[in-house]
Amino acid sequence: MRRRFGVVVLAAMIVVGGAGCTGGGSRDADPTPSRPAVAPSSSPTPPTPSPTPPPDLSAIVVSATDITLLDDGGAVEAQLVFAGVDPAPYVSALSATLGVEPTETTSPGGAQGARFTTDYAWPGLLITTGFSEECLPECRHVTIVVEVPDLAGVPIRTVSGIGVGDTVDTARALGARPTPEIPLAAEPADPALFDSTAEPTRIVILDLDEDATTVAGLRANAWYYTFGNL
Image (cartoon, helix red, strand yellow):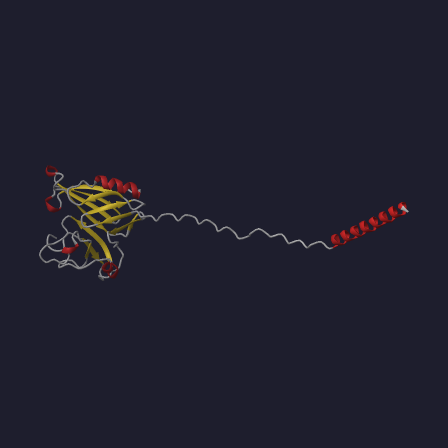
């Protein structure tokens, strides 16, 4: 009897084990669906913009008291005051910037009682200095005459931006005004005296074309005033 009972128990264990294997096979046949792989972000990195080159600020600037050469960054490279200063250093600096040498001539006589006059002439730009050797530097004076909007690609303008070729309307919008003796002038050394009838102030004279509609030239020296002494 004992041996038969053992055989029955063993048989029951085999049946239970077989059922467990069958159940496992069923789970393998129905696997859990896998999630699709997530693609990495494909948003492009915005390109780095190329740096904008700084503007070329080089210019020849005429005021009522001096003429200044600005470099490419807008800084003063050379300056020539109209009274008591030898223009030769400014002429050398300007020639180096332009890559063009002026025609230089010296002759006896000149304005304001000068014994000698030296001209430095480029096409459309004239720097004239009159002097007497016995009283240098006090009696030296300089006159600037401009007849072109630029020289060798370097613009020539007044402090407020007026240049040869601008219309009278443009010049007026930039502050140019008539004086008692001059049709149009700009850049007063003392703006408060521009309309004064008792005290003059130094100015840049704007020469006009035949129709009086366009700026044809710029002139400046130590004796150009809103009235008198012209």
